[in-house]
Length: 454
Image (cartoon, rainbow, N blue to C red; front, side, top):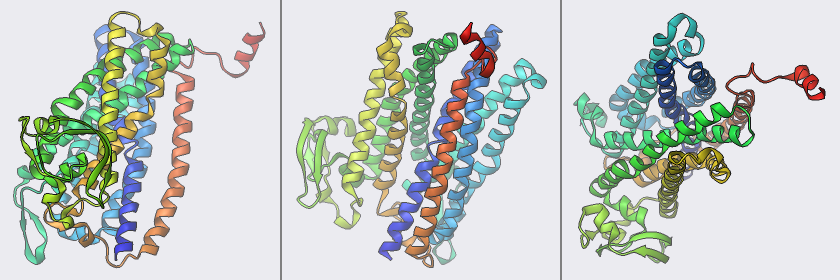
């Protein structure tokens, strides 16, 4: 059973990690599309309409691959996690159904109108289509996060016949305080992905001295929105999410921080290597009393260490949880530094000519993807060994009739198919970026060859 459980967990971890590459960009770009269309509506400048069309095409490519990789996850609830689905379907089925019926249909329908109906809709109608794409995308994110938040902090349920969970209060499920702060933190992470991608493409155009007017627009939008998102990611959303973990999952907080023994005036570990067997953090670099203050707003507050809890309640894979959490926080700090410095350069009128900062914006593109993945790993590993925190253990939720061999077979198949999809996605994005926001302006093919010889 242990072997099958491990494979089922790896299977779902792979598919959801690969899938989330795409929604985080679409949710971030959705806000930026509204920004560009608002500028177009206010100024009447065709430049912003062209910019919005360009990012709309990238949004569409990303959205399509996200749908393809997202559908199998829904089936995995039945194929790999049948016992969990049977027990919790009466609760999480509500939010998952609303995500599909309301937000996904809203987003996909108006995305089609945004991409292909601009002339029919007119300027105001096209702006409205962009806004409804944004609304559908962000509603979709909320319903998914609310589903996960119920697994982290179950509310609004009751036990039914046979031990299954039933929905007792729809609003307690939907307005779960864990969902509110987790959603805000998650969406700001998505916005940072969209901002870094947009700023990087703009930096590429400026460095290569092509489409420079669009390059300036993309860099400006990405930096301005990205700086705000990076700061809000730290406070209040990250701070409040940390308080919830300390209050509802104190053992998870101890594992995230590598705190094995309870401490009054607990330090914040910047670096170190957790040694689970010896119950200590090796080679620590710590800031005294900061963890106590951040957690309880008191410098000498007592913070429980892992030794206070039975080892059966410890999150498994504590080193991986510790490192994923610190990776997320470390990258978040880098994002604040990069975006704030870029914003200052923009304010002083020097950003577009600062090649070192433009290169930095380009090289930072993979980092939001890594940070968001590390953040989700922190949340999901931190919940272990619970599938529904305090109610259902992960080992109880798998499909008992699906062997490890069967799960490995489908996992290897997914890896192969997703590799092909990933290559196709990169090729399509490269093609759009190479064509640029105004492809009719640049000579192509034989025309370019003729001009080169003149």
